[in-house]
Image (cartoon, rainbow, N blue to C red):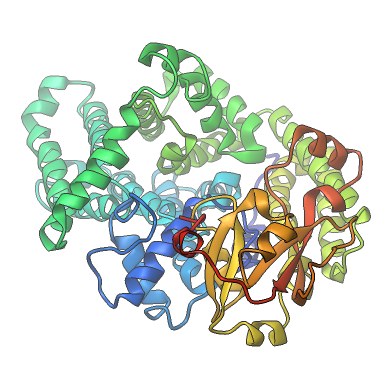
Length: 564
């Protein structure tokens, strides 16, 4: 059959997946969400306070933005801040992601009785760009996805024994859900209990009466016990009122506030509409977006002969889609826990899926590879030799998949991993001397107050990685090119300059260090210029660390923190 996987190929793809997820794990430019620096800030300040609770933060209204388990995890792996690095904060996320893939493999292999389908399900899920983007950084998503999906994997693995269990499965499921809530939010009790209800309903041959008689108390008990586990936060936190105000009311209830128009208008139009949620759900698959569309069509055509497990997977997806279409703030990120189910469905239909979805995935990959080639050609960066080897391997994989029909499906899968690795290697030079201050510069600013530009909250946490030992403060990003203004306010600061411009030093100022940095939030004109090949001057800046003559820092500036 086309795209059939052998045991040797399975081991090779596994090795590629492991390499992809570990390569560049400590990079500042790894795909992520801006929440990571906020979580790093809370973790660092809590560790510095030498306490587990209450959580500490200098960010206004964000002391209890998430439950404590993620921050405790960071405190433990970073040794109370003594081993502070992105690697130490992120490796548990990769472990959680790997465990999710492993249990997905076990569940799918069990109910399909085919190890190949199990391997495909795990590999497909890992190849999704959303899995790569959110499954590696220091975020709540990796543990959340693991603990929320584990009970559903158990039902798929043990089948009738788990469904009929009166005590063991309900208690274990409640424990898993409770841990997930302590990582992310108690609000997940609604979609998981709805999904469980639908699963029991399908298991009981679509009999609501039978579900209410045999399983109703189990489902209610699972939800109550999971919420009780989450409620331990209120019991052990010295400031439960702050938890209620900031997390329950602000973080959760706030997602139902009307954002732009009336609720129904927001539901049907705009960036937070139901349609954008569906688009985001499809986009979570990355290059496999057209493969998912073909799977939807294939599954619908075969709906009358679908296995019970396939129906259960669709019910899980529909439960989350339904519940997370209700808040006024809708995001594809809320649907990450059902992406393993999506991968399983693609794997189930793999051999019967038409080639067009995979061919479109390969064409998208070809565009990405050509973009990376063009990117590297227009930059005079010292790329490592293996970066060009990766580009050649990616191009070869795509061309083989487009040329040989029997290799199309596996080539699309492999190229998804290579695309992620290319993304990391393309910015690799910024993680070397090009994008970092020299050891002499770092030594010179140790225990010094340094002001850096901030364009989003907690951006200073990134600079703490670049300037270990310095006391970091933030100023508004729009002043980053105004060296005259900065030198009149701060004795030691970072300033930005276009690579095409010559930095004009202020009188008496001295350059302490220099590095290159990637810019964010380009204008439309700058984006157009980048597409025309003017990459260096529009996508990057030179950052200089400047020592100015002694200034009397105003109290207002001393207390003001733009990163907060």
